[in-house]
Length: 94
Image (tube, rainbow, N blue to C red; front, side, top):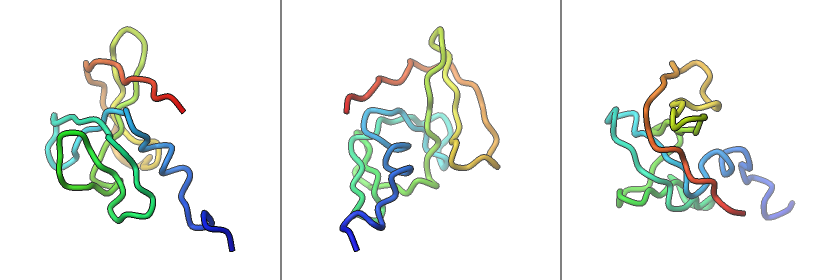
């Protein structure tokens, strides 16, 4: 068995560093993903929050043209999606 057999590549890509997220428990509170640590539970660390987060606690904010952003998560299609006026997400480098 390889070391990355249990690694969730889709989750790691969805919650990659540099993306803006909204905390579901605090609507209107936005932060930036600082790092994703696959071997940690929870695995998502935010820049302005000392507590790591689980994916189900966050909405990923994805950029659209003209500074309009789409708030929602493609990994949770049953959740309502909203449009917000936010600065566009930076494009993280790989």
